[in-house]
Amino acid sequence: MKNQNITKVIKVNDDIKEKMCEFYEDKKRSKTPPYAIFQAEDNDTIITLYESGKAMFQGLSADIEASMWEMINNDSSNLEDFFDEPRKKEKEEDIEIPFNINSIGSDEVGTGDYFGPIVVSASYVSVNDIDFLTNLGVRDSKKLSDEKILEIVPQIVKRIKYKTIILSNKEYNKYHNEDMNMNKIKAILHNKVLYNLTHENDIKYDYIVVDQFESPKSYYNHLNDTDKIVKNITFITKAEDKCLSVACSSLISRYIFIKEIDKLGEKYGIFIPKGASSYVDDIAIKLVSKYGKNVLNDIAKLNFSNTKRILESVK
Image (cartoon, rainbow, N blue to C red; front, side, top):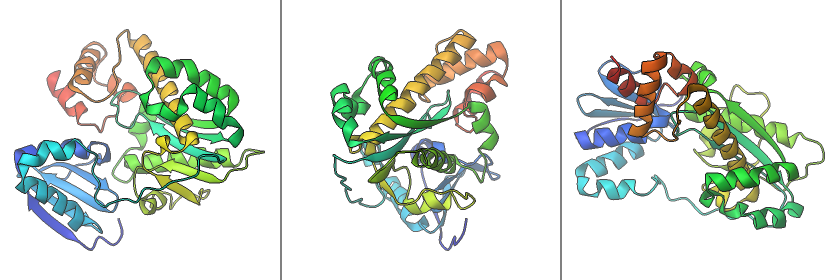
């Protein structure tokens, strides 16, 4: 990481240590320094949490990141209140885009799930598709049940153009390492589906929208080694609520993810749950007990803290 010009170390209690482990779950590096619980990379900052309770922050935003945890550590009474809402280190301006536009949007599914692949999709929605998609309920994509998604997505994909990449667990575990964290993987996959779709024939768009998962600067930094980069992207948080093409991509990705999870369940003869809860651990323990620990490489994201708990349980 370049320009790591700030280093700050704070001391946190056991409750905060646990919350930090959860909070940086999908940003953890595969290698952990000696005496550390984890090391993670979040935008411009590297976070190292030591067993002693010392947390070291290094990078351009180290002081902001450290100050946030220092404030929570000093007032643990507000701990649960803080984590009831998504973190916002800086107040973001609400970006509004017109509704009646031609747009390309991308979104991903599976990054917070221990089991199953990462699915990233990009969709093209023209003004002629808006009424059709609205009538299907696409504008409320996050409120749709799995059953409804399985019903309407086949209708959506018959109507609109889209591109999808499925990154299997085996591929994810191969690529994820100290220099290739979750956000970098997501940036590369988003860029690839967007590039493929923007180069389709007869696509005329007014906006390219990405459901924002990190700052635009960090997103493009992840693509430094990529030749074909899609520019002029509008990054919006909760973009599926504001842009139909992102909503379509969310639904398509979720549809494919559901199908892939079902395939895993059929292959191993057991229900495969979503998420990364203790129930997920219980299922994984059963699978490891039956098939051996190597089965996790094919069905799970090994860098998640679940793996350590699971393997300790089957010793």
